[in-house]
Image 1 (tube, rainbow, N blue to C red):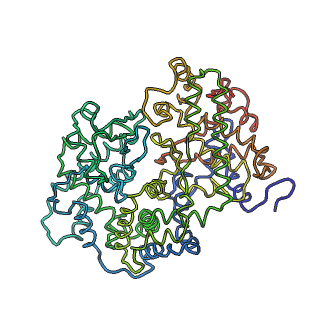
Image 2 (cartoon, helix red, strand yellow):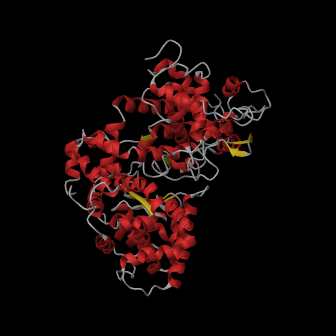
Image 3 (cartoon, rainbow, N blue to C red):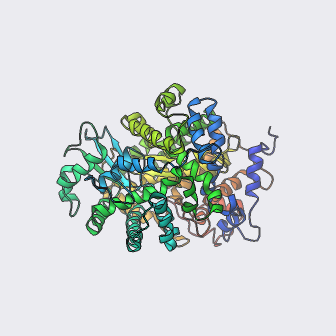
Length: 635
């Protein structure tokens, strides 16, 4: 129920309580970020949450069992991931050590540990196979497009999703690496003749490989590239078609096989260059040995529960992180099923309609702002608007997969009475089979809620990707107001949408080909001048925050006219515009030691807003209300 003055639903009351956790000792006109965030980032989830967005992921893990159970009332196939989750949590009896099964899996993918593999398949092919067929994107993430504009197949390669996770974990254990290594070694073999020098060499190798791949992943100036396999010789230094085409073919095992005319799409050509240099530096066998060791570290606790302690460093930490570890692996193993269960249990038809409509409105408003921009010529406007109009949002599975009969058939080979690691193996095998059809490839390409990156823009595919776990408080409420929505999920969507036309996005044409820029020469010059703002708290580029704010705030103000969302204040101290800016800043909160991928500057945003200055009565010349404001769009 709502009275005439304030929104008083449970969602509004909860959100208002969050917004009132401000630090009143700080002047919002001096440092709005500290004003909002220093009061909000208190001890949450045992003090392990370092940002608002990370809090969404912890909440996903906290409610994971409930999500599975609720979804299973609609899709009974969910009883299988429930069984795996409860067994991993220790709520069902385990079946003793399953390390022989993990050893057999390693053999199936042409690896071995602790002894080296004697197969001839290369490390690159194994890494591709793990990513594509088994959905284990350790070093690379890869997808295959059947219908590119050229009529050829495209192998789309990016840095592995797990690279930053593996690197952060490696840095935590590096100081006691020998002891850590011994914990796994003792579980796998009775041989006491461990070569400590070799272990230290593995430590150095692991650090070097992950650091090099991570530097590509985090590059601020990637060089995207699209070329046929026939062109590898002249496009990649010290590489040849004769070597790389068979490596891709062995890893992907497509039917029909790859040809020299098929294409490889690299998010950054530096990725292939980096791997090539690692291959020259360390040799193929050493890289395969490292890949095997990383699989052992990551998956052994599923095969031998006692290794949870080795994984997390102590029994106490293992108990703290075990629910998240289990939820991560259950979702990764049953990805399409878990996404379907979460969609049916957490996201109503009304929610889906609201979020989809809001995204369409954000795109429409961005298009209008581009067309109204006097500094763009008509040629540039045509290409920019064409590209924006083609941006798609990916967040939940298609309706064709939200059917119990389809899900039952898909996971029919997974026994309900399996051991924990048998669940892992058989579900992965199912994933391997699913990856043969484009329909399931698309579903497997949806973002998971078990990874840190909850919001992303895919430059290669022109998609905004949002994890389902993001559609939860404080980013999204079922029964909130327009200010809560657009300050939260709406703004987070816009942050990704505008990346389609940032300096990197402009290198990708609407047809997904790589160009120097989709802007004309004269407009490109205006763009470079316009995207730089020296008044923004020492930050140079307006992207993505400022165009995202301009787009979102316009949609928010216009929403009174074209949507059914509530437009009420949350209290006399929380009028609508104030709720919008407080919520927006809340989304950006992060501790200094956070590695949050979103990394958005709240102060940079509000410094550019006249509406913010009016809401908080900030005098001209204060830090949050500079005399000269920056703008990307004209209106």
